[in-house]
Length: 115
Image (cartoon, rainbow, N blue to C red; front, side, top):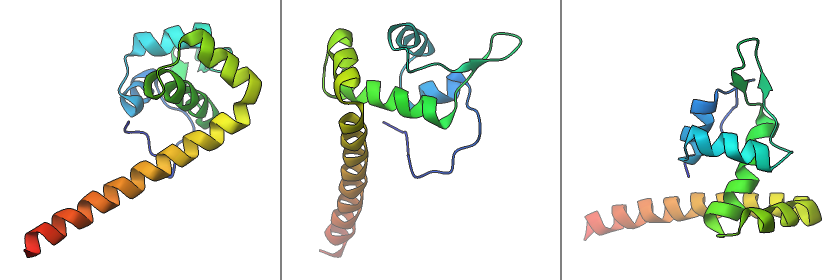
């Protein structure tokens, strides 16, 4: 997943930018928008979706549950409804662990070059 929660976010992102962040299709984002009421990007006059930081966080939660944990949409919906804050904390922990892993891989590569 290319999404970096520590990166400074601009005010609005296009559906294309959000799809690239999570390596999913724009069609999937539109589908999730219908299935998860918390994902509600605003639409400009020409019906162009504009995602805020909050919308992106909601997409990240769904991505974590559906794509990374393999939950069904119904299971993800129930989990988000039951314990959204726990899901948010889990998503943050997963992101941090991925960062640590990347750092460790980089250190290993440097050590391998010394040998």
